[in-house]
Length: 292
Image 1 (cartoon, rainbow, N blue to C red):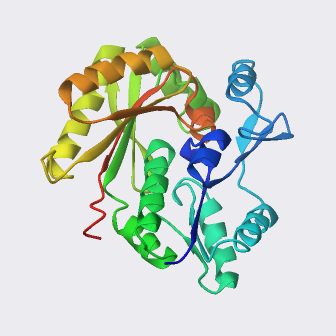
Image 2 (image 1 turned 30 degrees about the vertical axis):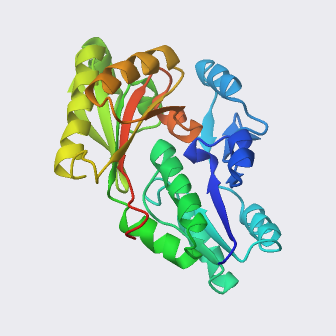
Image 3 (image 1 turned 90 degrees about the horizontal axis):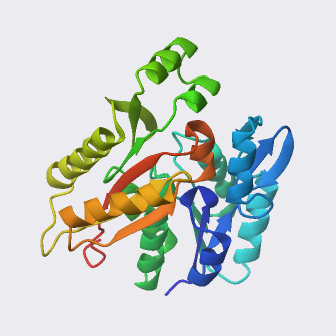
């Protein structure tokens, strides 16, 4: 049975501490704050990030440097036979494409998974990879299984403010001003490669209802429902909004009492574009490990 190393990046929401506990490697995502370089969960903590964001700092994201990626791979390949590398969605960052290019020099020993996931859904891919490796799958098999499953996930995110979308040029100042005047709570969707507008809510309560209905529709119509032989993973994510996330978990748990619900902060790479106060519901269809 091959000895497989699992690598991901901090967009997965997996901290360095959890990574050590699970036996995986997490590449910290680089951030430039007022042109100074920081690394998520290494030299940039979550409280410090939101403090600088609230102060109006100029924050931009980058991708791990090629030398950093290859140094990690080379170290791991001294101990492991193969590597499964699970970066954030190729539709949201060029880090996946860059890693795929670097992997060409490793004669198949490094398999880069392009399965269009981020945050809690990317985290679930890492957990799936760990289990598949434990069951004896090699790196190429794990890559194939995860990529075949890539569209069996959804994230719906309700924003608290339009300010950061306007600041990043993703909506016009006029649209942001109108949305703020009407106190709209936009709901965005991440499904596959893109972050898209999904709906507009007038209140937080209405936004939560929209997200819960959308997830229910996906569970029933896309993921085959919840039965004795078919299950889903449910998660709640947020940006500096833990109390609201806990309350949403209680509402969601009442609807799905037999399903475990995980809570995680959204990755800072997402947070810098949408700001604090957001809430998200995510769902992945459970892999049937014995059948893949």
